[in-house]
Image 1 (tube, rainbow, N blue to C red):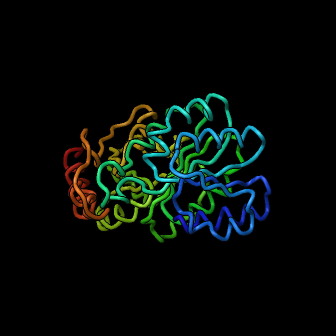
Image 2 (cartoon, rainbow, N blue to C red):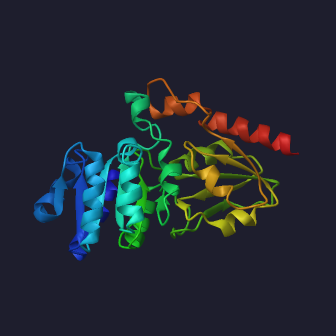
Length: 291
């Protein structure tokens, strides 16, 4: 996804001189061509994440469209107060773009995990929160939202899927299967590919959300009469879905605990039951409980 981020921002910068890139010493090599083409609009400020956000807000205040980028837990959790006050309270736009979603940096352990970013940023009034699942979704949603005048969060992953799931529009969920089944599985981001594999021959409806704020309330409400299992490798999606009233929901993903251990993203997912076999078992168990 970072390559697509680079390509999309490069294309936008060629068309819009207000586009600026601010890096926290991450993905610098990806933006070498951008720096050569637009030296006055490229700023690698190093590892000082709260300052990155304050500079982003200041550039937005001057009419620019900044993209600020570094690793997810450091740019969201560490900088929550700056995002809340400098961007949210002041109603300054700007694009917060992270890498290292959920467990992408699993080899670095719990300090580099990011599963609180989505619920935290959903709390800020006026904030838009986007978790694309594919490079195509990154491109479409960045082009759509980069100059919207609102603080917008793009949560990128190093493990995108390459599925064609249909037309991508900001704020609209993708209904992948509507079989009239009594159980609906809802997910978000790259995990949808794993969910599809786990539910391959199960009779369930399936919905994926690339926009977590604003959540697509109409699509969620469409499945109100079914039992909804939220399958997600982070927090935030289940809370967003439950803002729609009158639902019967359950969640399969993270416990109320820290995720420890080291390895690959696939190792962590398997340990959490977020591999195809674990998801299949959770969906089957949920369907039996709801029958």
